[in-house]
View 1 (tube, one colour):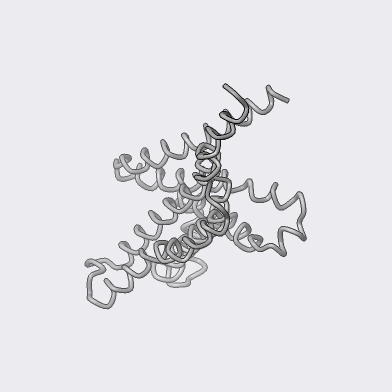
View 2 (view 1 turned 90 degrees about the horizontal axis):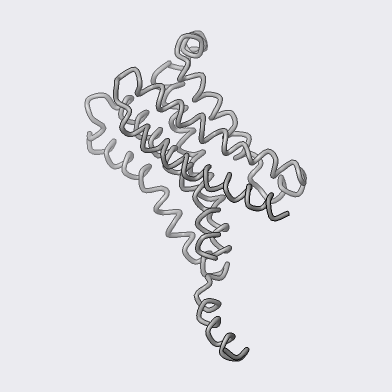
Length: 217
């Protein structure tokens, strides 16, 4: 095959690669999609649809969407490398911030609605219910990542920024453990097992990629 033929054969691949501008055009739609669960809560609240126990419903739903957004965030890197679409990285920050947003709602549901802003009750929960301590640790780490998600923080922290943001792996593990531990008390591990399997797949891909880079170095 001649060099010219090779270039022509490779051309369609180059044309299908998404540009940063193209991905940017989809960000408003992704933003609205990320807000959809919150909008649903508002609509249900206005129409008396938050079930007989609104606190439990919002706590459970916000926790679920925190996990979903976390896993979507962790899937961006494998997805962009497997598809050859580096521009997908432009939506990772938004996904991560939505994970924090729903995590904050989940935290608020516990602090405000469940514990009534009572520090003594919160401390008692942290001491007596290990799954809450694990979830609290995950939220503290998420807060640190959200607070340093700006370009200014990236420039300010330099190499330390990347080291700090690797904490998302620990957050994923803690979040799944938090959910697993909570559901274990109810003998209902179907959903936690699903989230754990997805997380294991995403982290396993990273370990394999790291090992291959190390062997090739």
